[in-house]
Amino acid sequence: MDCVLAIDQGTSSTRALVFDTRGRVLGSAQREFDQIFPRDGWVEHDPEVLWDTTLFAARGALANAAIEAHELTGLGITNQRETTVVWDVDTGLPVYNAIVWQDRRTASQCERIRAEGMAAKIAKATGLVIDPYFSSTKVAWLLDNVPGLRARAASGKLRFGTVDSFLIWRLTSGAKHATDATNASRTQLFNIESQSWDPELLRYFDIPATMLPEVLDCAGDFGVADPKWLGGAVPILGVAGDQQAALIGQGCFEVGMTKSTYGTGCFLVTNTGDQLIRSTNGLLSTVGYRIGGRTTYAVEGSIFVAGAAVKWLRDSLRIVESAAETEAAARRSGVEAGGVYVVPAFTGMGAPHWRPEARGLVCGLSLDTSRDDLI
Image (cartoon, rainbow, N blue to C red; front, side, top):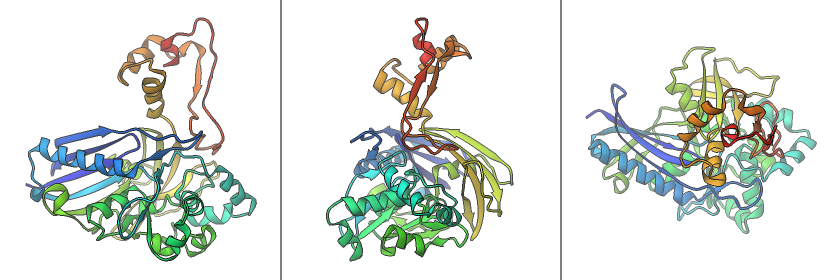
């Protein structure tokens, strides 16, 4: 059969789907996992949980589709972006938890970067603002704060990657260390004009080039999954960061076409074609996709918390038992929501404010405020 396996490794869950050539879903599986919050503003994942849930979802999707691995044309990966994993080159074991894109621990480092006058230079090279959101300061934090990592990195013993790279390394049993241009563009180490790792930024953040993955097009040769994982050798033929994958999935292939998707966060992305447009209003310039060596650019507005706020209602406040309950509650409350406002800055504010120190706010409460109003 001509089928493909799509792996979606997200911030709150990992999902996999088997598609046929007409785009029909033949089988799927999904598994949620917990985030780790060691301190205020810190967000981590256990990389082994990301790996285990990926295997669970991929194997489950194949089983539910009644498809064997040898019947797949290939597989693709989309992933939570910016989340940073560092692992040992010999053992493949992570040296620390994954530092999630929402994590704010490097806010003070970002202040130093601005004070040192690097913001404009970094923006020109990468299209990104100075914020803890991106991978650069996360990698630097790991090397500076986990004992022994600097020496191991200098001796070529460590590898860095966003989650796609970590999964590719694991799936290929260490045969391939690669990423795609969309994920690379979110590290704040990748020059989006030259489409290569930026040596000046690597020196500035003191990150050895040996740690970095090879950067490929979104459609390319990312190696072959070891038969021991899925029951057969499967070529890995496509990779894109989750928001760029949504841009592609929504068919936004013409200049000006825009997608807005709502997962853990909310992200609005506009295709700008071969023009690298630099925003003066707090949006990011980024790689939309790169296919056949040709780069399509995009501008993006990033909101860090969307669906995560519903998860907060369910898991922390426990005022709903399922996310689906929120729709009926919102309809009962009405558009005005009793005058209640919630600013969901649980992990700081993204575009256009970029305020990592901001936190969530609820205001407009009265004695008439109801559960439905808050929802």
